[in-house]
Length: 309
Image (cartoon, rainbow, N blue to C red; front, side):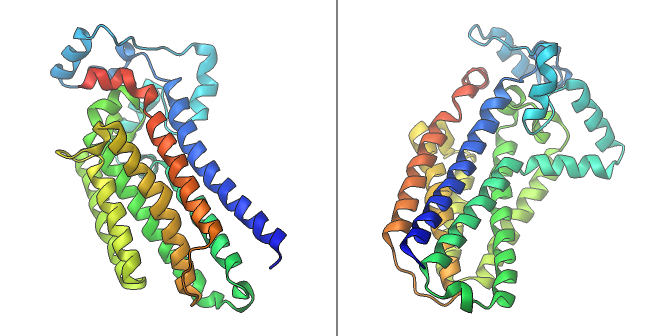
């Protein structure tokens, strides 16, 4: 593998990871521009009276509206549906037993932009590991490696669903204001169903890693599993502290994901793991990049967070 090829591979890996993080941030930021006027939304009106009284007492929170001319573009630009009528219809369809509506709610529950980010980071880490190992591409046993890669991806996506799902459960009252399109906040998914999905993901994911991958990867997976859980779960709930929240997301999204994928590929092709300057750069860069994203991604949520305190 020539030096030019290696540099191109490193650049591609970093670019894929940047696209992952930027897309995650842009999805959150764009969502804020399409927030429905709370006083007109039946979803907010149906919340507990304590929450409604908190809203009425707040002098700093001013609900935002979307103009009719902007509705078509904003609704299609973000995941979820910000039209209260559409959300009400979706809730009705789910109550009537519509499988399509239930699957769509499940899809929204997994936060699709984070799924795409996990896949992109995995592809980038795999490419980097193969390029760093001379002859790996030519001599690899693809018949054994591809199924292993699929299994690993499933475990990662289950871990992702566990983390974003448990966040939606404990942030329901906040999400009613900041992210009313999320299925738990909108009523498209009950807390019981949400707990079922989170429980399945949080149990099956670790079991897959424990059975098919080295013990080091299992320990790293469980570290990410734990950090992702305490980010949202009281009494620790690290998201309440900007520094702790930033470190949590940076550790899971920045270091653990990228290092874990790289190590797993090295183990699959039978090559010893060695820290190279390129891998060190990617790990440091993405950790720093994820830290910035973790701190800035919640800025549009300040108004809703104040009301929910």
